[in-house]
Length: 544
Ligand code: DQQ
Image 1 (cartoon, rainbow, N blue to C red):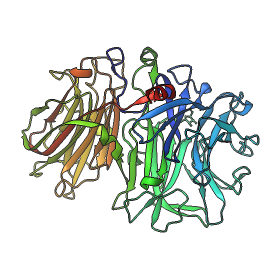
Image 2: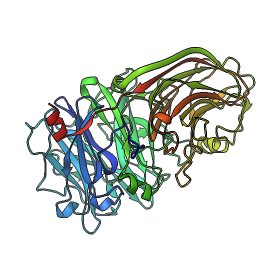
Image 3: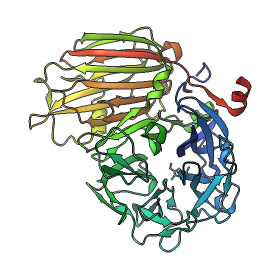
Image 4: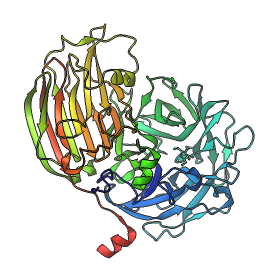
């Protein structure tokens, strides 16, 4: 970030310029993490017919070295784009890429590539299989709706399995393909899973989560105490939804708890901006890590002016919740290495209608953890049973609308005098069965004096019982991105903001309470964050 580039990030991944989209082919290989991503090398706009696989490597998932694209549009079957896909480790040593190629006619096929030289630790060059394309849209498959192969997993019969996203008769689904040699693939007759309540599935992801440990599980693991997550990125709606179920690798049957419902009650990784995400198994740390693409909320002319577009969210480790009803996400521990100066207070009363400034931190580049204690909930407003869309509820009740228990939370990326502010906050309601409902919102309606931006207010319900637990919030603020984790990772909301006044050293951070009930901050810790190192391979070499 600089005066000319106030919206560039300090610790969120981005290439030096141009368009970045979906994270692809994440993996850990011989001590190095690889991130590939949809990258348009020619422009900051998303012309999908130029997509290559951008490639960067890291030792810690925080600092990155940018390399040349790993896959370019140089074959007839991918002349119009090397679209999304995944990597699979055939063995610890042997990674391969499966990706979607788009030809001159717009026909989508699945293709294989492998590293040219396994002794290059960065795996800079990739070779495309002479047998490509390996999976073609034959029979009833619509050639324009056939893409984004998952990481493959091996079943007890020794065969590889992979899912490919598809849309048929207007419904989203995934096909299962199996192979013994990773080259000849057979499609199963019926879709692996299909849902009438979804459109085209982009970037499907399918993986096990443990029900009895805090560790992640390898995609091919045959461990018993697991459930499976099926995620689909729904085309045109641009949200990542997931369902949970049990998968049998013997029968390849996936029995789900509930189908996608196609309404606001569907589970999402993130209730703000977060799309085309993908997980990978980080073997040395035994965790599953989620990456997601966060696009701009600015206009195309704004993107052209900046010269870049798109960020990756901070990688999140992902676990199943104790009640097994949802996933829990938390920024990977390594990001805490960037924390520098800390400001903290404990036991502070936040009277109804007040704001409290958090001094002495770089509020445009910060990591904030706060927990709120509500000592009495008898005053909470009654929840109407028709209020089932949290985003709608948040947009009708933005931070400026006074309530009883809430809105309380943080005002981030705020200008002195609060003309600009983004509110991340909670409201607590009472349900008719005497329980409480916690609503989490990110309100960007006042985030910038600029008018043309997308300032949609986001919202999520948060599965926390405020009688027995404090209400906690962690927010990562990085110039133009605000990533918030409520209830220790139970509800996540990511937003993009472009303040005009609250930039660089002019940004401020506040806690606020615009309810009538006083709330207590039981603790607040805020850290100024260092900048991560993002350099080109050349710069890296000259620094050594
Ligand atoms: N982006 C890729 C496609 C994918 C879409 C093209 C999702 O493969 O379906 O850049 O954002």
